[in-house]
Length: 191
View 1 (spheres, rainbow, N blue to C red):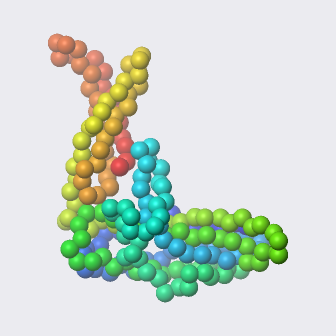
View 2 (view 1 turned 180 degrees about the vertical axis):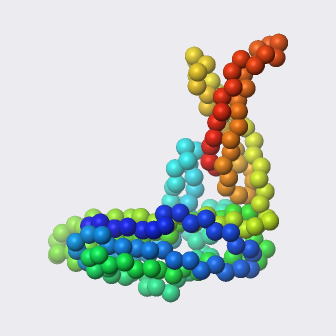
């Protein structure tokens, strides 16, 4: 089995009370017919920036999974080499602020599974990052700075206290007691 989803990430700006239509392309790049099941999941970013799928829906503070709908059946079949464009609609309720996040999950399974056999599937998806314009609160704090014993590596713990995802960058400046700059370390992180 071989399966492809495009795009892997959608960044959408939409005002509260607005509707945004978008498509996701799914394609069977394998040799056999497959079934593709569509579902939704909330997400969280781990401290090291990895995406974690969260179930049940609606349990994260910035969920948008219940705002996305499609008229396509939950399960669809794809012949070898077939490509389908799936239309989705994102409805942002009035009064919402900041950012919301979720993932549209596509799971590909063999079309037929012989009696008594086990089948493996492939999961892929499209991350959806929504920004509600003019409602963003961009703020954060540095909670901790830890240096390695040799002073060559640093770990900066940054906490996003706003209501939107964003990329941070900055410099860690190391000074002597008399204020002389000894070293400057640039950093970038996504939160």
